[in-house]
Image 1 (tube, rainbow, N blue to C red):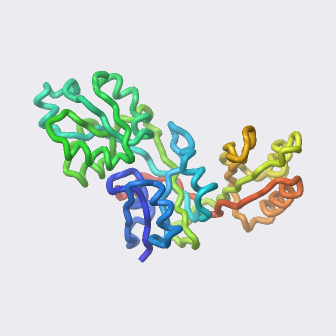
Image 2: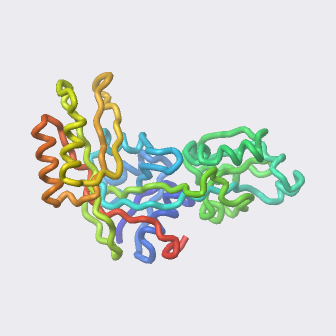
Image 3: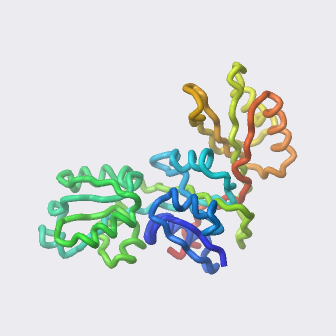
Length: 291
C-alpha cells in the first residue's frame, strides 16, 4: 500500500488526494508543517508527498517551489488540479445567539492563502472580526473547536468541518468561483494510475550571467519546435542579487525527441538545465469526484 504524506485531515490537500486516488487503497500520513511533508519522502517515512504549488487567485506558492528547488531533490511524478472550495465554519448556535448574522464573530482563523481568497466576504459580512493566520485550514478549524463560546470561526473545507464536528455557517465564501489549486505528487519512483493524463515536463533553467538575450534564445529553442509552454516563472537563485532561474512547464514528455533536442540546444548556450519531473497532468472532472 502506498504511503502518502500530506497536510492535516480536512485540508484541501486531503480532499485533493482522495479525489486523485479514488477507490485505490492508500495509507495517508498527515503532518502539521509542509516542511515535514517534504522531508517525509526524503526520510523514507512515506512513498510520496502531496504539495500544493499554484492557486488560481494567489498564483504560485513560492515557498513550496523553492523547497523543490533548494531543499529536496525529489522529482514530480503526478500533477492534478482540484477546486479550493472554502467555507466559513463554526458553531451555528453561537451565530443564532448573536441574531443569526455574523455580528457575533470575533475572530476568523485560516491559512494565509485561504484567508486571502475570501477577503471580500470577510470585509462585507465580518468587518469587526480579527483575522489570524495559522499553519493550515485544518489547524484553524481545530482551534475553533477547542475554543467554544468565543465567537471564533474558521475558513476551511467541508471535509474539515465534518472531521471536527462543526457547522458550515456559509458555503463557498471565496471571492471567485473558479478557485483551483494545482498539486504535485513528489516521490522517487513513477506512479501508475488507472486514468490517463496529459504529458508534462517541468524544467529548471539557470541562465549564464554574461549572455545578453539568453532568455530570448531559450524561449526560441521551444518556439521553433512548436513546444507549448504552459507556465514560466522566475525566482531568485539566492546566490547573488539579480541572479534568477526560470521554471518552465512544457506540454511534452521528457522522452520526446523535440524536447530532448530543445534541452540540448539550451545547454549549448551555456545554460544549466535540471528536470524537476516528467509526469501525467490531470484536470478536475466534477462528475468523477467523490468529495
